[in-house]
Length: 485
Ligand code: B12
Ligand code: SF4
Image (cartoon, rainbow, N blue to C red; front, side):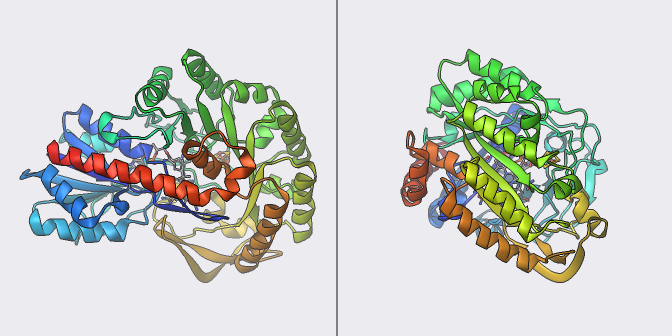
C-alpha cells in the first residue's frame, strides 16, 4: 500500500481582504507520521490547489508509480472547501490508475458518496485509522454507510481516547521559516459553554501531551527549518495552570525564543491574575479571547464570563503587566437576553480603555441538523430552551461543508444580528489598534517579522505575495521529491 494525503487551507477572509494561509494542517502531519511509523510508504501534498494541475497529476502518478494498492486522501478538518475540486482530481487520476482508492478524513460530519469515495474517517480518528492500516476489524466504529464512514464513539464528557497532537516536521515537508507550525498541549476542556461545538468540552479529565513531544516538535522546527512561530491548537490554554507550566518548562530548555498564539479564557485569567506572569513566561504573546458578551445576564446564560466587570479589569491588568501582548476579543451578536444598547455600551468600555488590540463581532450561528451530534452545541441541540426559534432559511459554509440556520429570539434575528455585527466591526476598525485578529496577525508575524503591530494592517498584499513565493518554492521541491522517490 502507498498512501498520499492532500490538504490546503487556502484563503482566509479577513476584514482587510483575503489572506493566503501560510500554515498547514498539523493533523495531516500527524496522520502521515502515524502511517510511516507503521511502515507504510506515505507522504502529504500541501497547498494542493495552488499546484499547476498537470504538474500535480504527473507528480502523483510518478510517486504512486505502478503500485497495486494506491490510496489518496483529503483532509477536511480545518478547511473542507476543496472537496469538490478533489473529486475532479480523483476522476482525472483514475483515468491512469483505475485501482486508485479514495479516503476522506478529519471532517466533522459525513461527506462524499460511494460513487467516488471508498471510506471516510470523522474527526479525531487516529486510533481507528491505525487499526485499519494494520488490517484490524474496525466495524465497531462504523458510523454511516455511504461512503463507509468511521468515527469514535464518544459522547460529551466521556473519557478521551486520543492523544494531543504535536508532530515533528520532516525533511520532505519542505517548510520555510516564513510558515507557522501548530502543536497541541491537551485535549479536553472542563467548561461547557452553551454555544460551543468543541467535541471534547465538559471534560473533567483532559489528556495532556508528553512534554518531550512538544520539546522535540519545537526544537526540530527551529533547528532544521528556522520556524519560531507556533499556534497552540488547544481550545483553551488557561482553564488550569498545568498546560502553561508545561510550556514554560519546555521554553526554558530551548536555546531560542519561540512565540506562541493561543486561545485564552479572559474570565479565568481575570480571576487568576498570576496567569499573566505564566502567559508571559510561556511566550504566549498572542492571545485570542472568546469573550462573547460583556452583559452579565447573557454571560451567565452562555455559561461564560463570570462577572464581565472582572473581565474588563483582567484585560486592564494584562495590558499594564504584559504590554507587548497582542490581544483580540471575539464577541457574538444576537445572544438571547442581550440588547443593542448593552452591546454598544460594553464595546465602548473596551475602546475607551484600549483594552484589546483588536475585536470583532460575529452573528450567532445555529446548526440544528448535523449528523454528528458531538459537534453540536447545547444551543444547537435545544434552541428553544435558550430562547431561539429556528427559521427555514439556511446559510452555506463551504469550509465546513454544512450550513447554519436562520433564527430569531427575544430581540433580534440572524439577518439583523449580521447587520449589527457588520456595523460594529466598522466602528471597532476605526477605534482599536488593528482590524485583524490574532490568528491573522500571527501568520503575518511569521511572514513579515519584527514590525510594529499596527503596521500589519497595510501589509496584507505583501503577506500574500510572500506566501505565494513560499508556496511556489514548496511546490518545486515537493514535486521533485515525488518524482525522485
Ligand atoms: C489552528 C486553527 C486554525 C488555523 C490553522 C492553522 C494551522 N495550520 O493549524 C487557521 C487560522 C488557518 C484556521 C482557519 C479556519 N478555521 Co480553524 N481551527 C484551528 C484550530 C484551533 C486547531 C486546528 C488544529 O490544528 N487542530 C489540531 C489537529 C491535530 O487536529 P485536526 O486538524 O482535527 O486533525 C486530527 C483529526 O481531524 C484527524 N484528521 C485530520 N485529517 C485527517 C485525514 C485522515 C485521512 C484521517 C484518517 C484523519 C484526519 O486526525 C488528526 C489528528 O488527530 C481548530 C480547533 C481544534 N482544536 O481543532 C479550529 C477549527 C478547525 N477551525 C474552524 C474554522 C471554522 C475555521 C475557519 C473557517 C474560520 C474562518 N471563518 O476563517 C478557517 C478555515 C480555514 C481557512 N481557509 O482559513 C472550525 C471548524 C472547521 C470545520 N471543518 O468544521 C474549528 C474546528 C474550530 C471550531 N470549533 O469551530 N483555523
Ligand atoms: S468555548 Fe472554550 S471554554 Fe467554553 S466550552 Fe468551548 S472550548 Fe471550553
